[in-house]
Length: 639
Image (cartoon, rainbow, N blue to C red):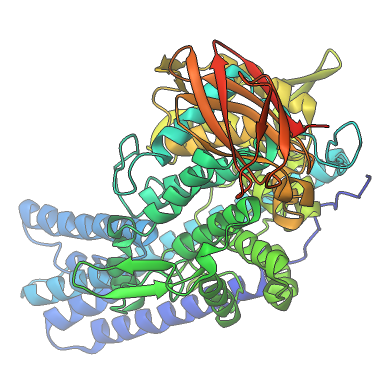
């Protein structure tokens, strides 16, 4: 396969039309507010109203009106002005972090009112000029920095397009017959790493032992940990264990049920109230793609890999509020709500926190929609795809090709400095199932900037510690996981080998047969697992192709006891089952149940204690294994 990797477009405008219109609207609004404030400062007879007017021009500007008299009076009022400005910055961070749109105007207006209530008889001559100058300098500094950033990005654009290699599409690896995707065996280390996810998923649904409990608004929230673990297990089911049901399907169901716990979605009551002025606590409604979009992807991947349609049923997703209210949903309803939000949003992409649009979260939503369409023959994605892509490229791709991590739908603002090739690698992994050409471009940029040729392969440049969003610590593991999972998905074996060398050097702990990396969040562990479990086109194939018929209909491991019996490979060709098993708690006799057999058919059991067995009327057969280490098992019809 050789599909062209598109160059980064050379844009005449640094901003998309919607972003520019939002910024223009904000500038006009501020201009009108400042003019009102200056009119009050110039025409009002009382010093209180004059100070209030200056407070409208700049946060804390009203206190400067009274910065006169003795040294202590000057310092006190300047201190109030500085405190107001600091509180305003904090309110902006709160707005960013929790979607609280009330905080910035309340702080700004509150400081103006507080200054106005002072109403001192003595005022500082020329205070209006000082406040206007302060506002002007702040605006000038912001515009100047923006232009410098754009110039730097434009310079990178030319260099990147000149060096941009045409990263080709890579074919899905196939078995020897060339009919089915290749299913490789997990190494013992990979199996120990997978147990990190399984242990957390297979605990009781209402238990959260081993999860990072920090806050529930930003990336460390439980919802993201649940989703990431669910994605990992669906990927493992697809790439290494397509014939493993039992504890692997149960683990995925547990995580879907965990997402319904009130402690996971209770944050939305506050965010919706202070961000949208809406008292509805239901997280599957307006906006909130960070809950509904990520959930849709988890549901879609689970359904695609298991064939289990239970979440199609009305009421399958029931969110119970402590006050007795119930918010009843299902997978089709979640998809319809996502599309309704996309239709209603001018950007098509719609917010996570109220006001803030994250393209990555929207990409999860698209994966959930596309998976649903493929499995049920609907056309939800096709109804919005063209508009979605157009807005994605116009409003959320920077002039140098980086993805814009977030944008304010109300103001057009973004937070500079958050984009990087490491973050683009995460987009690359998920975007490959939706817009493979854009995914290849992102990977080609990351590959050119972060890797160096060495000895016929690649060497990863030294990485600085990066903020782990799952626990807010700094490490290199998060970036390694992001690069590794993208390299695996894009089929870049050289880059994957280079990343694996660094991953192998990470601090690690083996406890009870489970491999973990101390100090790393569930986010990072999930990224590293996607690297370990992935293969070329794995996520794209799962979303767009799903399970081959032979995998869906052939023999499977229907039951096994976790962690007593671990499975490193399980695959069927439609007739026979091949599996590799390990003891999880020491050597001994272990049983498993094979399902989806032909009722009344006698089967050969190579590797089991018994040489043959008879499938019962329900197509099931109990098999006993003597496990001391690795044990291959093959189940096939007896001649």
